Image 1: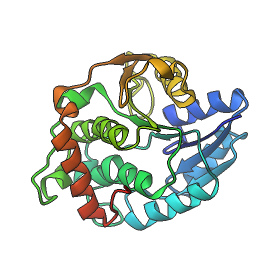
Image 2: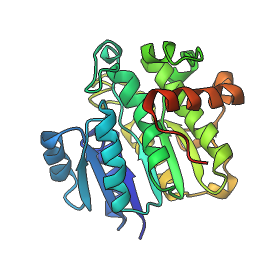
Image 3: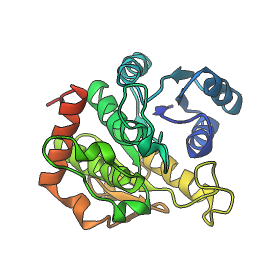
Length: 252
């Protein structure tokens, strides 16, 4: 039996992935933004080990979540699934920073710097990462205006950067496709099952011996991400700028 932590798992792909893992006899720690969402998460996944509450637009709550989640670990895999979509780049979060940047980019960076290393890390990206830009200017100002596509590029870069630093950890990013969830909309053409199957495969490491460190996956197959995601100096600059903004340094 393995243990997993999934951020943003009160509904959608995070919740469905949790259900699949629980049905296989594994332990899953869920995460929700607030108490109401936590009740939704518990109702959807009654077999979950715990539901932790934290608004990832808050730097302080994200730090507290890292400590709470660590107390329930260690984990075989952590799935960084939480994310917000278009429009939230202009909405300030609890810490005063843009919500989209804080939830999609800063929070997953902080959690992994503050938590014990799992066997595997999974970052949820999107095909839209291919149109994203790193938004790195050396002083951390441009990145605050990150779009959704920019943040999904950051998520691919995380898997690449952490894989280089932590060779003992399987680090991966995944495009679950445009699927009919609350974020994707009911008219989305993809199959939810394909995204969930990919999440489960990566979390369990099924076939891991044949995967690249920092690999990017679509429909359970490793695929080449955008060229900019492979840029090592940009990966290092991304981590450095997030360290300056959050005050959380990368653990060596």
